[in-house]
Image (tube, rainbow, N blue to C red; front, side, top):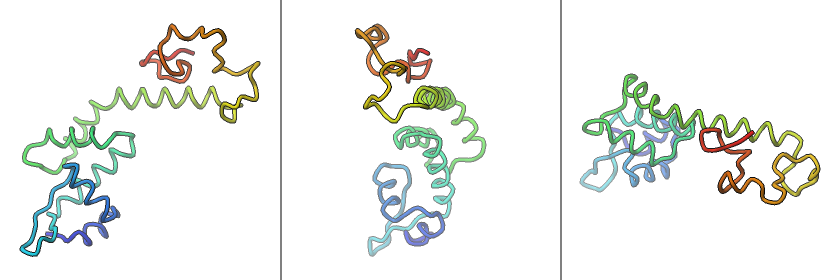
Length: 148
C-alpha cells in the first residue's frame, strides 16, 4: 500500500488531483485507523490509464464510465485499453475532423473581430447557414453536420 505522497511522487499526479479523482470514483483508497489514505500499487497503472485517456480528449465522466465496465475496480490491462479505445475511435475521429476544419478555416484569421469580412469563411450573410443548425457549421466535424 502506498501513501498519497508516494502515489503523487511515483505517478506525477498532484495530491489535489488524486483526491479529486477519488471523489469522482476514478480511483479508490483504503483508510488507516488515523484516517490516512492508502492506495494499492495497482493505482499507478490506473492513473496512467486516466492520464492517457485525458490526453486523447476524453472527459473524466467518459473515463469513469469506461473504468466502471471493469470488474471489481480492476486495473485496466492492454486488452481492456484496446477494447475501450475502439469505442472511443469515432469520437476521436470527429474531434480530429473538427480541429482540422478549424485549422484550415482560420489560417488567415486572427479571431473574429473580423478583419477580413470579404474573404472570411465563417461569414454567414443573411443567416444562410441557419438551416445547418446552431453553432458554426463550417467548423463542426462532418459527422456532426459540419459543412465545407
